[in-house]
Image 1 (cartoon, rainbow, N blue to C red):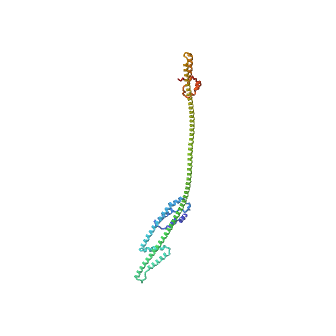
Image 2: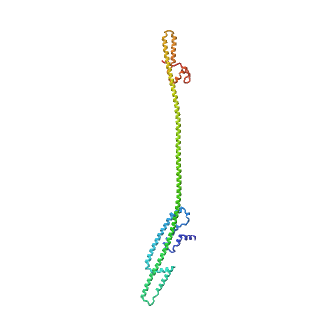
Image 3: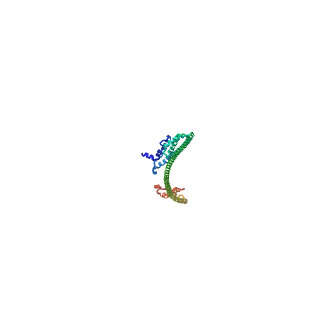
Length: 377
């Protein structure tokens, strides 16, 4: 019962209830198709907050095209019905002049089922006129009057047929107006629901746009913060790179300073060695010069002694004291020759001349005994 009441309250149920009890099969199939499509589009009315974005998207991308297709189908069916109605009206106008009897019987059948007072009055007046026409004429009336009466009856039948046709046309127009009003109301209702759906979709899109705007602003703030962080990181990286370069330069400068100090120490040592060598060479040169002067002096003394010995030998008479005197003279010459040294080959020999002459120790520490210098001729 509750489901039946809900169906009656819903627009789909109302459409089902408005279905005529007797319809052609093609009309019943068309109405059933439309009702099925309307049921497919019927949704429960809920607050807008209970709809999710997926439901709204489905309503917009699936139900909206179905609703538009249903509206297009209803418009097409309405045009077809209008064409059929125009065709039926034309057929009714063409057959009204030839089928007066059928129209009269239809008028009698419709007058029996109609509840309107105008239809009842017309049917009663028609029956009264017909009963009067069926009565036999009085005996005093001729055949010409009978012919006139028959013509009058035909005119009356034509007028009645036109009246019935007008009533039928009025009923058809009333039904058409009612159908058009119902169709317009249903169309207005569908368009109102479509407008509501579009309005809800617009509100949803506005909310989504606002949410996307907030997300875009948040993303812009995050991008600005990331850009600032990136700039700070780049500056820190540049500072660290400069510090590393400075440390490397300081290390190189320190290494170069150490090498310079080592080279300076080496140069100072070489200068000391050079000075020592220079002093040693100067001392050796002085000793060599002193030794050369001593040698020259000794040579001069030897030459003088030789000359003195030669003079004394000439002055001595021959044969007097030859053995002892000759031996003494030769001993003095030999002594002078033994004590006349040659040029020293090295500075060590020059420095050690005194020790060799005194019979001191040699370079190795061994005792050496000198027997005099060489004999210079």
